[in-house]
Length: 146
Image (cartoon, rainbow, N blue to C red; front, top):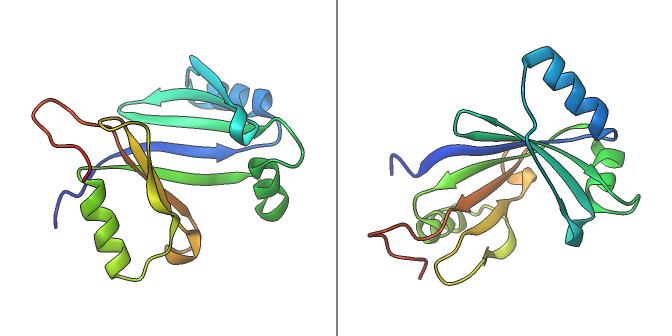
């Protein structure tokens, strides 16, 4: 069972004012937010700094009715989720289901037959923080998801 998690892949902070938050983290901690993108399906803007092997995302909503805006209205600004890179998505999902953990959606979302896949652990199952599980995709010599 040991070693099911390879890395903390990302820590995601939800904020109202992305520019202000990025400037604060750059000023206080010397972070460099070199990458940025949007996720149109979620009306979300992302700014990313790399800290070792972990990505630190500062996200904000592009519309007042999107998922990040709702999260901030309901819970305030703060950690939206933490993502763990897993060695074997199928094994992890089976393990969590066996333990009665709620997964969202019910099956991992796969980005192609050998590409990355992800699924979320509902916050009510893990002390109020949403956990994203990420399988990075097939690497040389590995088998893909079943």
